[in-house]
Length: 376
Image 1 (cartoon, rainbow, N blue to C red):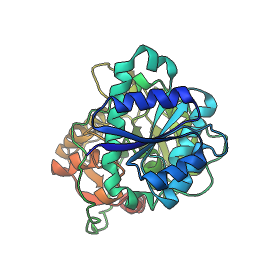
Image 2 (image 1 turned 120 degrees about the horizontal axis):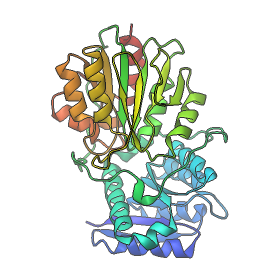
Image 3 (image 1 turned 30 degrees about the horizontal axis):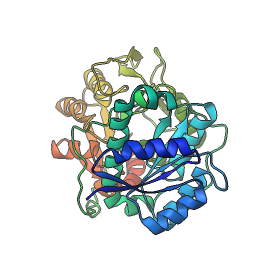
């Protein structure tokens, strides 16, 4: 059965172009279009699409307001388009906070110069989000419906062609919603020297929900690896820093790990940690699918800290983090995975579970609390 898509944009050119790209895929059907947020809500209720592509800046009602209403009235995976401007980047983070699942930068030059690459990326994103729809009601019930974060939180997205590839080593399971995982026991306390968290699609909201539960005096250093384009991570770190009791910043070469500080791997690069607690930021390797890559950071942590790492793999497409988690387990460290029911995309955590690497599987709302309990 074809994936039903509603295309929302006030630009007639962009509506037509996105519709043409999607319609060229025989497994995708554009069931309708809308020119503003109010129309988008009406069409979502009437057409019940599997996925909605959404612009932000529109007359009558903007995209973020429309996303909030859709999440409340007919939860549907939303793929936001954002302009490559300072304001457009801020809006992208607000849209994810409102309930949108993923985003693509709105870049007309890429559409004209790299049509095949754009088509592949857009269609893969739509297919992935449609598979998340089978669990989406459960996820969306937790989506924030509050006002967006302060306008001072900013980010910039990169071009369509530079976002992380949508190729998934571990496929998203297209199945009926799984019941929540049986409640895992409280974790054992241990003097961890590092907490390492890796995530991808759905990660910005997931990280916010985990990190805001941590106290300012959290006793372990934290490193965060979120699949994001290069110009996005600094603003995301600033946003988290405003919302959390702990400190959060985009990692820079030479930064030192310290308790109560979370360092976010910069987009387009790789982050490694040495045994002295020094962060090394390396150029992104074109041979690697992800920049930053969870496997790279996890692997360096395994080498530097042996059995003193608590790693967590959250929602995301693919299997990044599995091989790094394997190295951590071999060294005696601990690996947690987010449960299927609370994931937007059960890809990365599923890869951990299927490889028998998970010491515990927790729901998203349990992870922050258990991090506090586990770290001495």
